[in-house]
Amino acid sequence: MLTIRRPDDWHLHLRDGAMLQAVLPETARHFARAIIMPNLVPPVVASDQAAAYRDRILAALPDDMKFEPLMTLYLTENTDPADVAVAHASGLVKAVKLYPAGATTNSASGVRDFDKVRPVLEKMAEIGLPLCVHGEVTDADIDIFDREAVFIDRVLDPIRKATSGLRVVMEHITTSNGVEYVKSNEKDLGATITTHHLIINRNHILVGGIKPHYYCLPVAKREEHRLALLTAATSGDARFFLGTDSAPHTDANKEMACGCAGCFTATNTMSLLAEMFERADALGKLEAFTSLNGPAFYRLPVNEDTITLTKVDEVIYPTKIESGDGPVTVFDPGFPLHWRVA
Ligand SMILES: NC(=O)N[C@@H](CC(=O)O)C(=O)O
Ligand SMILES: [Zn+2]
Ligand SMILES: [Zn+2]
Image 1 (cartoon, rainbow, N blue to C red):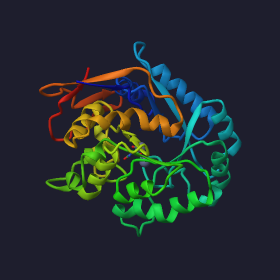
Image 2: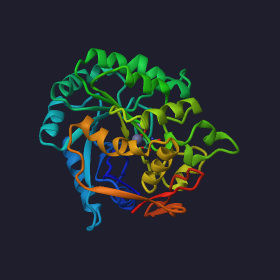
Image 3: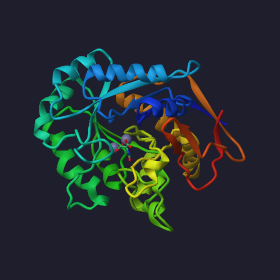
């Protein structure tokens, strides 16, 4: 048996409408809070949209559940620094999200010219509002497996050097380059690590037939990178914390000629993580990763209540959840899980 403070998810896609209704309880069952990604269609770019989205999330929450959505704004070349500052001061917005234009799902309104967002970044540095970054370049001539490492050198490091005091979260890191970059900085830099990137490498996607439900962005890399992520996550280092990036797409949209990127892990994330931490002989570090390090970075209190995981013969979880838009496949690690959230 293992009791830890209730976890938070520092990177989550809840979508909207019927999908929101279906996936929200999967997260709220175990997690107290989550940083809510703003890549809706159209994206959540202004504070009034973030407030309205927050209301829709709370309206979709079942009566017997408690959950606090931590809202973000989608950074565009037209984002108004004053709107960001007001949204932060009111407590509504906890981070701003940077998507390089074209890097991932619904990122067409993202940033092309980083000079255009300089005034917003300066304002964020001044008020201490974190920037969450999807860290991949989009240049056609850069191999998809190199896009994170190239982003660090060409985009992230220059932005951080030009904007002193800017607090940055590298979202869903997938490489040892990401781990090393975070470790080489003492302050103002953290990283989220997803559940699935601790489990799969690129072979899982491609060997023995293509597995669309393992396809996400940034795409899983070589085994040596997965091991670097696992070492970072299980180390207790406060700069690394859980962001599941649970990203639901219907099976119809995953299993097609041009399938969507995203793994849906909300349902079984805590069981998956406990399994991986136990295998790494690091169950004692699970709480730091899921429940302590994130609040410390975001300067929020840790949760007061707890969850208890118990060891069972095999955890039973649904292979799919139903949404009004169609079924969504739950991430299947390909091995049995043994830690169930009581
Ligand atoms: N991670 C993914 O593969 N997909 C995310 C977008 C993102 O986080 O990049 C989504 O919104 O579907
Ligand atoms: Zn992303
Ligand atoms: Zn995401």
